[in-house]
Image 1 (cartoon, rainbow, N blue to C red):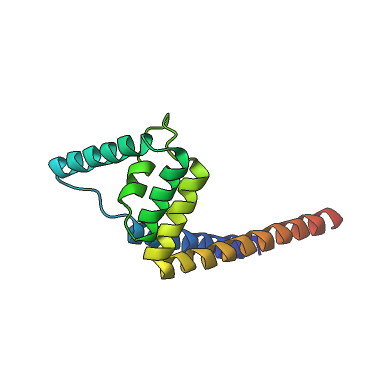
Image 2: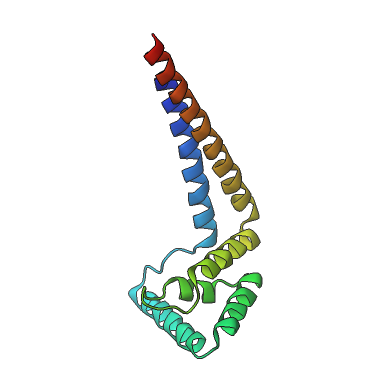
Length: 141
């Protein structure tokens, strides 16, 4: 029974991972293969971050969400690639902006991730309950 439970749980985990990967692929363009293009992208992101740094925090957030809601991830990607020591946008705001962009650009994949996450949470509960029940049965035998 434990083997079947583990096998089914791994299948649900796999579906969740595949859904997350599909969402990532839909919302993140491939990285430039050409080093010149990669350098240009890096420089553009630096310029965006420098411009954002000049704005008050509320305007940074507004600018980020305006671009995301317009379906443009340029500012989002620049903020996501900020150095760890930078505090252009708080992490919770960045998370909300990423989710907003994903819902705008890839609503089907976003819904698939939500459903797969709910399935995974339900599977974890079932697995835990069954493990407790099996442990109880073993102790009383």
